[in-house]
Length: 263
Ligand SMILES: [Zn+2]
Image (cartoon, rainbow, N blue to C red):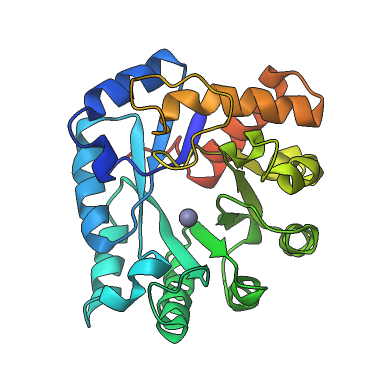
């Protein structure tokens, strides 16, 4: 199976990334898309991908970091995105939960990434947290095929999901779906996502899946090797065999990120 969102450059993985990758491979993770949250991150991700053929990455600016971009960031992004290991623009979007960057700045940086993804015909890896439809509205400017929009770590409401599905977007589900208390709404909504639009991701090191056995002594750190646990829980909600669910999510990931074309 394929983890379409893991923050392998996060400082929590500094020091034992080789072990993290070895555990992932052992757990049957055939490919990981490394999430970049800044352009510096994207550069580091490319170096990591150059060493590991089973990794690809995104390039983009997370809404939290929108306030930190250089003046010529768009030109830098366009150049970074041409690197063959970069398979999507992002993560990009809006996060009004804590507003680490001013909302207007978040909007303008997101808008430009929507344009870049359309211009380059690349998928857009989208972050949407507490934006009350603002991400959805801006996405109407996306010029590529709608399934190339991946709303990652979906944790929204039923109307949010309905809008995204009606627009034709793809949806990423994390271990949030394993949480029987705060994930309850997602647990009831997730099976409404058609299997041909569903992708799975850990968002590691964040969102340790509730009920999983920690792979190391670091009890709250999530890792790509826990993706099979998430897939199992999700398959139970869909009431399909886990192999069937994983067959779909893997094919969707290969198609979306064009993993069969050479890096
Ligand atoms: Zn995110």
